[in-house]
Amino acid sequence: MAWTDGADQTTGTVITATIWNNYLGTAGSIQKTAPAVVTTAGDIVYATADNAIARLGIGSARQTLQTNAAANAPEWVASPQSLLDAKGEILGASAANTLGALAAGTNDYVLTADSSETLGVKWAAAGGGAWTLEGSITSEQTTTSTSDTVIATISSLNIPAGKPIMIIGQTRNSGGTATGTFFLGMNGSAIGNSSNTNTSYASTLFSSGNNGVSLSVVYLGMRGSDYVGTGINAMGWTMRDGTVVNLTNITNGAALPTAAITSIDVRGNTSNAAVTAIVGPTYVYSMAIS
Image (cartoon, rainbow, N blue to C red; front, side, top):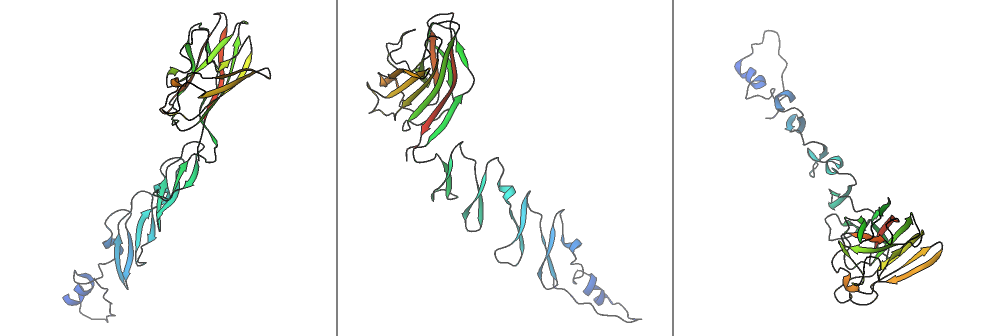
């Protein structure tokens, strides 16, 4: 309803029904005041034209007020605070003047441009052959068993068959001069030569020796049905007291899984029950292939 201008009255003027209705009745416009227009807590009033007002209903939680695309009225839109609802998210544009949120990436991933993504960017492993930490154990795990046993497990992995793997681990013995023998398992199964027995492994990848402390590094290449078989599919070395004491390879590569690696464990036993075989901090890395 357009605004009706008022008129000054003089003493003695009789207010007729017509005059009254022009100002205060349903045919008039004086009832178009802000209190009369709003209906809900949080509503706001804005001008639609000269001396004309309208209601804008309250927006949703954490929305913000902005001018619409036609630049002739206010509107409620998503605010950065309303879009970011989880730790680590970042803002991006999905189109001109359109905000969106990118979920937090995996640890050690980097932000990478990708025009096929909704926001034009994504999280991805660093290129250039960088090693990415996939998982670790940082506290010592022990066994006194003289039979094969899983001593420590790094779980919750997801390393595709196409990625090389590097494993760095520390081992030691305590309580005697007999040796502890350590080897690897993947996805819950031991890897190595099938002739492995309780105390002798043809593919020993870790060995702490007589009361020794060892650092071992193991490399595993890409794994696929055409490249897993008898041969060097993994190799490693063990250093004790500054000297390389063990250079080994897995001689039966068929034991390597061709599926994604979901867990890696350090298995082993002692040659004497009086000895404790100890697995120390161990780290699993994968390499991104550019």
